[in-house]
Amino acid sequence: MITITPEIKAQLDEQKKQCVFCKIINGEMETNKVYEDKIMFGTLDINPAIEGHMLMMPKEHYPILPYVQQKDFEHIFGNLPKIVNALKKAMLATGATVFIANGGVAGQQSPHFLIHLLPREKGDKHYLYLFDKKKKLDAEKAKQTTDMLVQGLPGFIHSDLKTKPIQAKTAEFLSGIKSEQKVLYEDDKVLCVIYGHAQCIGHIAIYSQKEEHLFEKLDNDSAAHIFRIASLCSSAVFNAMKSQGTNIILKTGISDDNPDGRLCIHIIPRFENDELKLMWEPGKKGDLKKIASKLKDEMSYVEYELKEKKETKPKYDLDKAERMVKLSSKEEHKPAHEPEELDEIKKAINRLRNA
Ligand SMILES: [Zn+2]
Image 1 (spheres, rainbow, N blue to C red):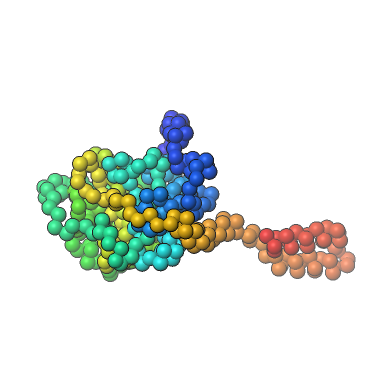
Image 2: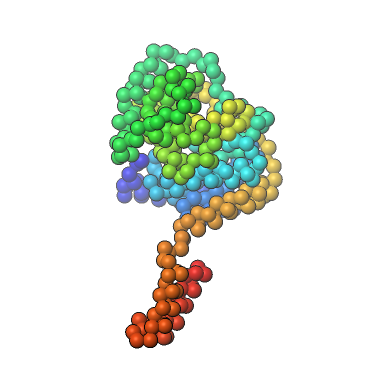
């Protein structure tokens, strides 16, 4: 995570003035809003790859993922399973793709960091992320990069997380992946390997030790953690390979380019003219207003849930408080409170109950 110094803050404030997405978030520009809470904002993409293609972004202006500060990061990625779940429900989808572009060469089109969310299903004929199994890479160079990552990545991750990793109790379904792919990093939540069918040198795959198929089944901590590791892997390949950008692509559930429905995050370093085709052509637009209203309905449950969580009722034992008031009002000799005072307390208890 990049520390935002006063100099960087001044630069970002300048960038913000020209930012279309900041204008959308502030309500200065119209949009098909589908989600909003204190920290994040969701809207439909006006040039969707697929029906229901939505964008989720922090309200704060961050240019790329490494800038997103801890609190926002945890809120956005920790709650992303709920958002993906709502998106799937609204669009009756069996899977989803989460796509992040860091840098222009990776397909980033605006200076405001955002996440593309695509509802997916079998038969949707999107084969963009059905990776070529026979891709030939420079073996010597690939080995050098792998060695460099094996040596450097765990230390890089540990120093950022500032915690001792919990030893992995590798789930059985991951043992197959482990034996055929070079392990870079592992803890109790994630397994990080050099991808077996790498599309370029430095192509990393991250699997969840908690869940084989569905991202939306992950709890807040596990979801935020897997994206923290993805972000660190992305920074690591960016720095180590001097790449010009990176893509982070999460596949979850069954779709045409994820036939086994496995949950996996791919980290792909990007270079100018690398001939990787990871961006979609704009697809059928559909009725954006209608789609937005469908999504909004499902997303409103998430909005409500997160709001409830934030404003949890105080942990007073109201029943006990009421009994105490009654008790003290019965005590003739030593009233703990004057009658008016008791009334006030009763009213306060009722207010709390109704809050
Ligand atoms: Zn912005």
